[in-house]
Image 1 (cartoon, rainbow, N blue to C red):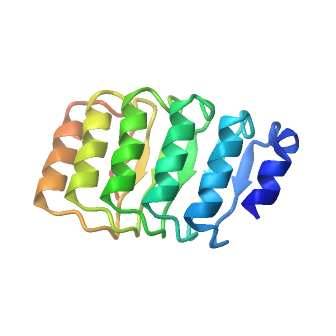
Image 2 (image 1 turned 90 degrees about the vertical axis):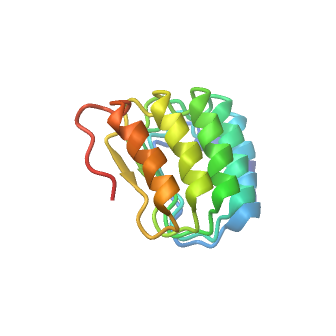
Length: 170
C-alpha cells in the first residue's frame, strides 16, 4: 500500500488528512511513506493517523527523519497509538522534536505501545526544551512507564513548556 502511495507523490501534495489506521503497514510501510514525505508528499497535511499498524522502532525512526527534514511542518495531530513502538523509536522521534520538527503539533497520541522510562525521558527532554510548545494533548496511556519516566515527564511539564491550555496527560 505505501509503495503505491510513494509512486503517487504528486497526488498527495494537497492531502490535509491522512487516515491509515488499522492497515498493518508495519516498519516497511512507514519507511516507504517517510521517504515519500521527505520528497514533498503530505506537505500540507495537518492530520495523520497511523494507529494500529504494527509500527516499531525502525518505522518511527524513519518517520522521525522525515519530520526532522521539515517536511511535516503543518502537522497538528499525530496518532501513533496501538503500535509496537519501544524506547529506541521514541528516542529518535524525541530527538527530531528537540531539533524543531513538528512545530505546530497540538496532539500526540502514543498510547498502547511498549514505551518505557528511557523513551519517556527522551520525550520529556524534548518537551522541556519547548519542542512541543503548541501541544495541548499527549496520550501515553498503556505503556511501560515507571517512576523514573514519570518523574522526568513531570519535571518537563512543570516547567510550563506545553501550550497554556494543555490538557492533562492521559
